[in-house]
Image 1 (cartoon, rainbow, N blue to C red):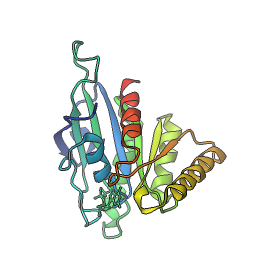
Image 2: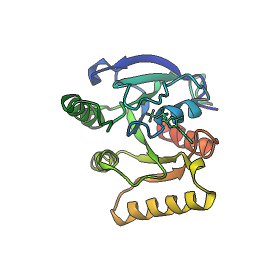
Image 3: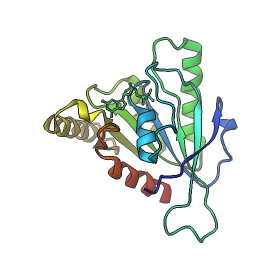
Length: 206
Ligand code: GDP
């Protein structure tokens, strides 16, 4: 697992508190309770890495994790590679000013972070795209940033239903002219974990 050995670096409330903007990083975004922490933990193969919670919206911060060098890069000058966990979004109990703060921070982050190579957007496979998901897809489209959607909690559907949801999502992207990619995922069942890891590595290498 190329993402094994991810380590917590810091939690930030503003983008200028993030690690210095060099090397390469991939950001994880999603609505609160979509399953983002569980996805990060599954990808890193480390159950306690990101905090999972039954209380959606608890973590309102950006969290940076460092990764060990990718395979084949060990001997070279070290390239800083990171995963960034963006704050969960859309939890009703988060007060409006805080929501606005994060919207602006995420906007600034996506627009100005030079080391950012792509976004992994976590979406519950059972739900249609919500306002936050659309905002992320739009941001990525306008900033020419690759966006890869993990349709997670696929274990809640039959295999057939999951494939149908994936096909519908891809069709929607195509009809809206979006370049985003998507796959089926389940942190619980391990579905699509390798595929998602490969995508993250591919993004980090670009
Ligand atoms: P976050 O708020 O997006 O970080 O979401 P969490 O990772 O904390 O997950 C929210 C809830 O969804 C928790 O109760 C998880 O146990 C559950 N969950 C997350 N991923 C999966 C999954 O792949 N399958 C199922 N069945 N439940 C999941």
